[in-house]
Length: 466
Ligand code: AMP
Ligand code: ZN
Image (cartoon, rainbow, N blue to C red):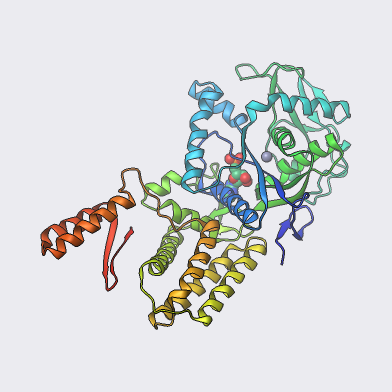
């Protein structure tokens, strides 16, 4: 079965192939770098990472653009409060975002681009819209007249016919009830950062940046455009209007939207104040892999209820998988190969792939892997798992990890390297042979301090990081 994705535009699951059959041209709306991202934002970015990895698993190449919104109302207000230029103000949060993304093992998009580096592209797009009669100017600001674009509402599936022509909004974020002509270029305001352009002094509205940057790097029709569910309206609806009004071509073939991360039944948001940053969570001692696992474990179109209990369960699940991998790598199994086990592994792989092909059903994929791990552990205990079954099992684990990426423990910079651990273990073995148990115990204790656990088994010593 081919990969199927739920397309918000068509309101149904559709088979996905890139238009050229090879390279997926994808745009995802990135963070507004006015503050630290919260783990709700990071859920959406983790979904995009899983999507990237699955597209590659399915043999496609990627050309993925993500923007950094480094100019908007909040950034302007906060930078003025902090007495900094917007560049100075956003640099720290951009850096923080990159660190958070790296901690969560989010692959870097092929193009990570800043809005403020593309002001000229936005101006050119607004001029094109003006030439085609889709804009008007009022008090130095340029607006998109939505009555000139009959398709307005096709993404959010709302009939906006008959809304007040000429009524307009200057804020970038507004709700469906306030659908109005939206601002493309905002006139300069006293004390605020502005750019001198052929449109007059001012700054871009939020929506235009994504249309300008996506089409610049990906062409006029993208394969996939994705973001959080709250972006469907007005942001993505406005992107469609701007882009299609300018080119006359469909803007994106697939629109994918991730549901929100919730806390106690409410969307996690800065405004509600019910948020945790990744830093908050890591400071409580949770591993970044556990956060990644939790964020990835709920299929993206379902809401994810965040609790610390779920985070602990995610940590325990990773531990089970790591222990299983360690067993595969270190235990000595009977000679030969069991056909039944090879079949079981092949079946698990098929289930893993089919569930992810089904609109990235990550919960289903994890279920398939855990059932298989349980069966193979049982077979190992019973002596039915053979040496010849190891390779296929490790291969499936590697496939799993190419998507979920949680098996490798996060190594802190102060931590000890694998080679150093091996050397100390060899020294401990030598000490034990020489019956110098005090030295052997000291080595064990010093490794434990660095988070390395030794286990003496009948096959020798094996070790793992805590
Ligand atoms: P922002 O930095 O506000 O532009 O948001 C970055 C991304 O996070 C957007 O795709 C939003 O749709 C998404 N987002 C915002 N709140 C949540 C949430 N509680 N859960 C999941 N995604 C969210
Ligand atoms: Zn966007």
